Length: 180
Ligand SMILES: Cc1cn([C@H]2C[C@H](O)[C@@H](COP(=O)(O)OP(=O)(O)O[C@H]3O[C@@H](C)C(=O)[C@@H](O)[C@H]3O)O2)c(=O)[nH]c1=O
Image 1 (cartoon, protein in one colour):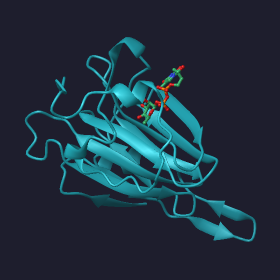
Image 2 (image 1 turned 30 degrees about the vertical axis):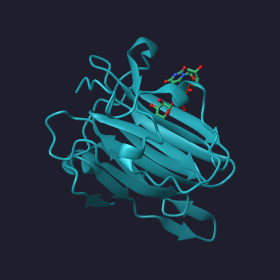
Image 3 (image 1 turned 180 degrees about the vertical axis):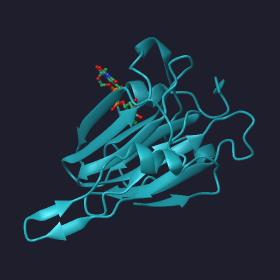
Image 4 (image 1 turned 45 degrees about the vertical axis):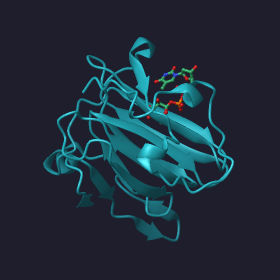
């Protein structure tokens, strides 16, 4: 398992060792020991899975304290462009984003620390998106950021995105009152 770090502090990409053989493939999708040493910390309490067709954009989402969540995200089938935006008010990289393509060949993962808005677009039909969370779902604490806010400068990689009604009315970065 290898780890890659970014200019935005706290963000880690996990590159697992994938063992391929005549039967298929095997990799460790979670290791508390290896990941904690690499800075991927949290008491993981909930796993989620969604399925999306090509062009679906989900995000950008976060939960407010005291129900804030760190996430460890990956794709089990298909391909996704994963995006996280730093919304930590005191961060020198506030408003900046990291974008990582996640796929079901490398089985790479992204660690999303608390204080980030998270979203992704599915690049293939039937993309299965899996993630661990450090806090339970708390709908009253949901927050978000408008996915296509020009101030974010995110290139989502698809035209005619499919976006939920809820996600179309999220605040822009300028309108956001970040709870972090
Ligand atoms: C996130 C979530 C949703 N739900 C329900 C609420 C709703 O009826 C249905 C679909 O919810 P949403 O539209 O919010 O699903 P979705 O847009 O996929 O939300 C997810 O987006 C990605 C980008 C994230 O980062 C996640 O944390 C989460 O916010 O599932 C749960 O029961 N538990 C959960 O943890």
